[in-house]
Image 1 (cartoon, rainbow, N blue to C red):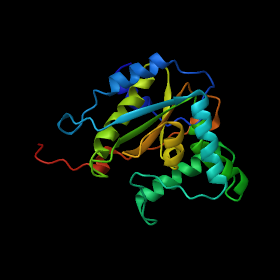
Image 2: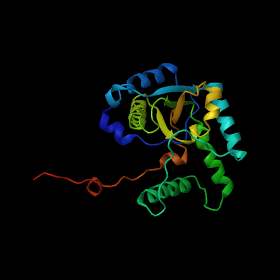
Image 3: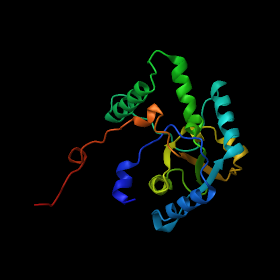
Image 4: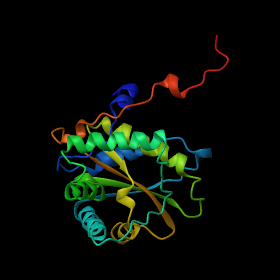
Amino acid sequence: MHIIEAVNRRKSIRGYKPDPVPKQVLEQILEVASHAPSAMNTQPWEFAVLTGEVLENVRRSNVDLLRSGVLPNAEHVVTSWPKESVYRERQVNLAKQLFQLMDIPREDTEKRAKWLERGFRYFDAPAAIIIFTDRCLTESGPLLDIGAVMQTICLVALDFGLATCIEDQGVAYPEVLRKYARIPESKRIIAAIAIGYPDWDFPANRVESEREPIGKVTTWLGFD
């Protein structure tokens, strides 16, 4: 797939077919993605790839904690957006589109709760990639590099007919991942990527997020 086509086609997929993803395919994706740029070639990323019983255990434990009222305690920097900002507006617009496609009325707290749980289940994808880094690094230092490798994973996955969704909810309860994925305390868990074959009949997969025109967010200097 041409790189420009991959960038234009990539989108967050929130519904997957149950078909398993072969280990060798996931391995190839990570091998290619490991060529992503990093500051002075430090490559501050590590991966745990989950499927099968391990992934099911993580899903179940995440949802159990969520339902019992345990607050998420992610180890990465949690992003927030000021209420009266364009960033919050974009987030709300996306949520409205998703809820409309999924037929979730604003007042239906039960449906909203069920939708929230999907993120903690990695949207029922057949595999998940957990990305972590070493605690000897500063909390924010490796994030740009990890962002680069995450984007590369998502683009390379398209070449194998796979879809992805980068998500925070999958790492919201790090103690679960430490138990089942055997990630040591010396590592800081950063993000998760749900990965699998997309179910195009799933309503939320029809979402189309908008992008700001380049002319609105770019200043051109020194051009005739």
